[in-house]
Length: 275
Image 1 (cartoon, rainbow, N blue to C red):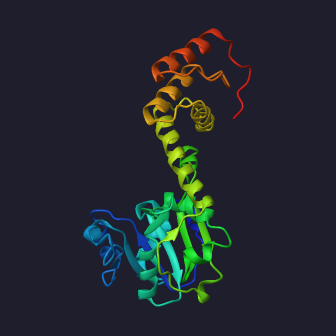
Image 2: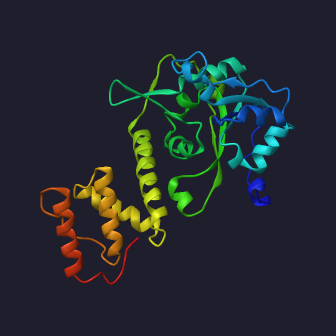
Image 3: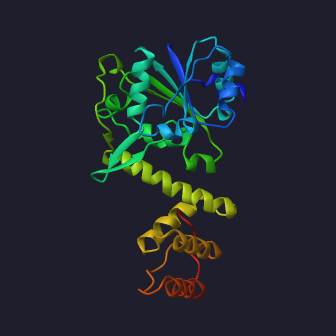
């Protein structure tokens, strides 16, 4: 990792913790850095307890820990998030466990993998001034290295840090938190950007930004299933000079794609592409 990456490392004051994503050799690597470490399994004693061995580890740190130095110099080797919290470790652990399950669309529940730096890059920026104190609770600061799928397409990764000035006044959560509209939209964008990223990796000659425009054009005319949208993007990539097209007539996907192909073949390409 470059010196610039280390120089950009956010300033967090102890007590510090690393919440690290599961890997088969994670526990071994933690002990190699810190033989006296006492990690806690995040899924233990929750409704995810059956998967505790496949869940994240919460590892207490000190400012001179070898593990913290390793994370700072090569964060991609230690995917997770860095936390600063003044409350007792047990209180922090309980709060982190309560964040695991979120509610959306009324009574539906889902696992929120907020400890994944990719998810964190979408989720935490979507926590506004009103909601972030509740989500962060006793966490004074949260930091991570990475970015969105769009950032990955641009080969960009940076340090992020979010402060919670209300940490000292936090009260324990008593129930799963409902996602608000902004958070829901952020997580939906994550899924769409991942779709475009995966597609663009198979078509590296097409810019991510252009594929993102095509995605929304395809959704707007009804290509909203995975295979249909993939076929739509594949077709658009064959005629990259067209900035837009009329909506194909109703019918089966195969027929609508053929109508679109006929239009793209017969009509002149646009003189410029707006990204």
